[in-house]
Length: 441
Ligand code: PMP
Image (cartoon, rainbow, N blue to C red; front, top):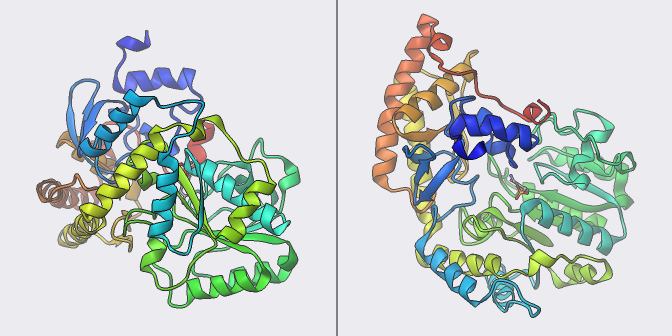
């Protein structure tokens, strides 16, 4: 029956077949417009998406959750992939592209000597943590931010159920994570050296790694990265920068390259690396990466050929076309446009500070009704839109202008409706959801 269903109906069916309905929280239709979001795509090219009913939208939201930095179905990357398909994507021998890619990543990050690959963010983080633990012969991990779905990370919630509050996904449930991992993952907040120092005081000789995103919603305060580096060095812990989201957005490579002289021991990449093809990378200093050989880290699909092919083509185009500069221009225009439109409508708004990882919050008791209505009205005007936006190379000034013209009208409408008190009456579906609790319902 599923082949006759489209959009929300297909998603309702999916929930009976696939626990949770989708394989990524951020792509759940409930996060946008429950019972109304197009949910599935027939095709996607550039910044345009066609749903199963043939409706066309400009994607002004998460662009494959930030993976598609060049835009959907990029012709250059896809041409390289087609060639690889014709030559065989799997073989008893290894793909030479993985060595070329390892060289290129080390050229872009001269502090790194060695590279390992996996095919997703969560996987490569687990590889990084394994290597850090093998290298230091210690168990504990001090972390800030979100680092994927695997046991080492979720175990943070085994001790105190709210340990992850403020670390991007509050309420993550560690059901199924062995209790023996309790107190092996220790959280601290971004820009809070004092919290990290406290952890270090209590667990000094046990900390294998300090892991963090070099930047997410805000830049580091002056001296913050330097202080973390100094602490890691002084306790003999491995410093890991998780660049799964921040990599290939502000420059060709890690965002840390744009933030002064601090260098980690290991860094992880995934989303922007291969324009949506499955690929992830861990780069690191030889002195630490060598520990990979003292453990067992090995998987069949880490040797397939499409991932490294796509990554090489993505990085080369990213560098050649100065894609980061384009993304910064687009993101800056969108965030500036949000702020102007909100001010003109008399709405109080907060916006993110990294120009290529954009989001806004409206300060209003009925914010969720406002942002749901925003997505609803944007959809009716031909845009996939939410409070998040990930610029790509495919976003052109005309997309931004049309989108911001719509946003200006809609923000005024939201402000007027809030004053009249009829926001909820205009909603054609339930409120959009936030947070992680949807995973259990
Ligand atoms: N680390 C960070 C910083 C991330 O943003 C994400 C994904 N949102 C991950 C790790 C996990 O990556 P993946 O979804 O590919 O498993």
